[in-house]
Structures are given as structure tokens and as C-alpha cells.
Length: 140
Image (cartoon, rainbow, N blue to C red; front, side, top):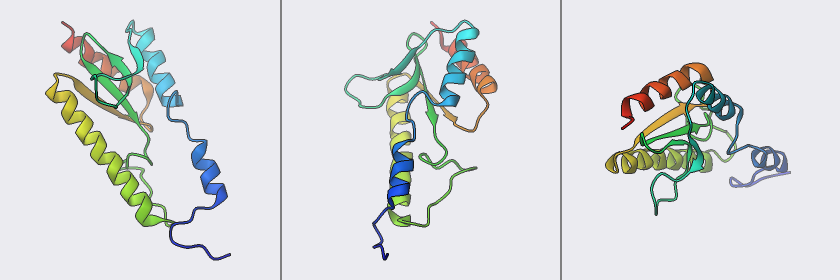
């Protein structure tokens, strides 16, 4: 069956719709590690009013916003793959995600926040230790 350049198979559509955007394994493990270390935080909150960007983990008083980025969706330099089907669509989508991430980091920095990016392939314990160090250093 011939497909045009913009079509997507029903299998791909179904697989993509099952991708979790929150409470992924790395996110849950990261939260467990931080909680076990005595840290308390908010989950899936917007650090800045009026900006529709949501941090996965938020440390309000320390002004640290943690984002857990998926390797595919955010174009991980180590693990990103570029689909061959609909290549132009996916490249544009992932590049827009990257640009939005940069814009989010800049907006947060301008408002006195620190944005921390964790890749989904990272181990939770070292990532949690890195976050803990940053939060401790920024606590009032």
C-alpha cells in the first residue's frame, strides 16, 4: 500500500500514543532517591506563572526546576535516533522541542531559577545526588 511522505502507520501511531509523558521509570526512581535523601518537592508544576512549561520536579524555595527529558523526544546527543519515515516532520518536531527547552531554561534563569535537565538514560542515584547538591547550594 503506497503512503505519502506525511503518513504514519497505525502501528507507529499506537506505539507513540502509549509513550508516557509523566511518571516514567526514571522520573519515579529519581523522586524515590530524592525523597529517601530527605528532600521534599512538588511534582509536575509550573515554576513561572503565565508560562505554560511544567517541571517534572520542583524545589520552590531553592528555585530549582528539574526536567526529565526523553532521549527520542528531546534529541539526546548520545541516543537520539532519527526516524526514516516522515523524516522531515520528526526532525522539525524534535528541533522545536530542543528550542523550547532552551527557551524554558532562559526564561527560568531570567527569573532566578535553575533548570536542571536529566536524560532518561541516566541512572537515578547519581542524578539525584547532582540535584541534591544543587538544591542544598541554592537553599535560602
